[in-house]
Length: 143
Image: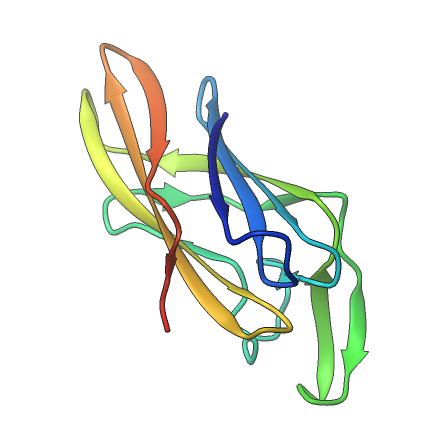
């Protein structure tokens, strides 16, 4: 696993780890300090800035979340939101990739709450001689 940590021991610090499990599954693990949380990529809410993964040259499948977050009513969002408040692991299949060797940059976006601080982490996913690998940049605070 590759690790990226941000902050110290405060409600907006976290640990983020990414790995590829052969043959084609990206694994993302997130753990925030007590009191901090992110919105699950499985949430239908978009007000808070849920965890999202984008890449123009790769296609990702459905996210699997362990432990599964549960939707709870949020007065501010005026709807149900799936808050991730404990260490969580997401598995995301890589469904469509370029043929042969390649290197692609994906962006993992998330907002650490309740501090309302958005972050982006660049994941470089590559295949060389049939082997997939991922490296990550340090998470950048976006504001």
